[in-house]
Image 1 (tube, rainbow, N blue to C red):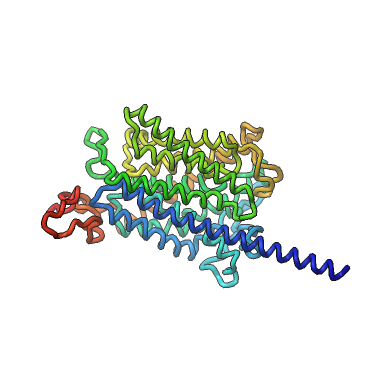
Image 2 (image 1 turned 45 degrees about the horizontal axis):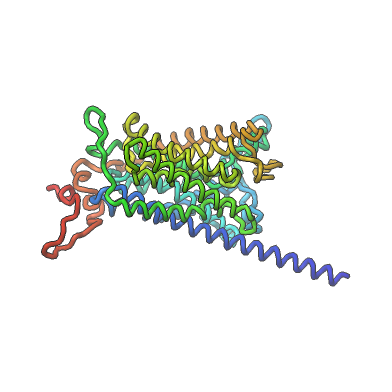
Length: 476
């Protein structure tokens, strides 16, 4: 009998070890899918840019990855996850467990983590490394969003400093409040507001953060030369390569399955198939509604609005993807596809802010909408025990008004924290190195003035076709 019991215990341990290994494998594969989204962002943003700025836009999307990795390794990961509880699906030592907190009404409110700087050897385990890699990819997505909003006039040195600030401090602090055991995640357990601020895969943590930083940066940087005339009338600056931005949109849609389904952090959680299909439906619905609404608004369907419609649907479903029915996913994506067009027009025509790729509307506005949808449409089918609260996640339409309040509080904290700290950081860097290239360099093109090379080179062969926009690059 003793031998039989011993055998059963050993088999159970082997089964748990196998499950943990599979969960880590799934998490790493999902992180790789999210990493591939960097290529999608580079293609979309460069496609929206002009030929004289393509190398510069590509370079920003390329280097933001490297800067983000190192800044997040040095301090960002510790600030975000240093006080997080262990992630059971990844095994032991997947939580660092030391959080800076303050007392309010007899409750501890977590502010930021205090352990894990530079990934110390004591925590550089398979579980810790998997969590670091996955969370780092999410941070880098947020960091690359402002490069599109400030493309074609942002000084490269300023971009580098700003990206380090996002990865090392701005993003991790808010991410700690939602995903690292901070106070927004505890609004349910401590104050009875649903399950606290819930964001399954990053509508608020990733996309709203990137959108708010884009709003701050683009408004302070000012519009591109020629975008608005003296009367404030808008002059369109067309995308130079529509096939490139369409391809980039599909790359992003592909990587989004890792973004959303990977956030289970467990290959054993069969809910990931529901999450993947919700993601699929919302993206398709957003693209279709963007096509139909742009045709109604402008007389013809706009390919760029189709692409941004798909991205808007994907952004909006990212927070509620695990908690809503299939019809709700279609509804969320469809609304987002219309919302992104109206938001882009409002930003451009009313606020007079030049956003070449529509990052503010795609990520900021639709990220906010996605976070709100958790508080409205979560149907009680998933989320039992999330953030230490028993029972599944339910929105207002399913009987929990507190969840809606928690979502609104989380969105407000994002605006206050990211907006204010982003503005201070932007102004500090402006004093140190300056943010905007000069008038002459902007006319010439940032490829030559900032990088000393052409993004497109026609060659010196006789009869070589001139590159569109070359005359602007070679202003004497």
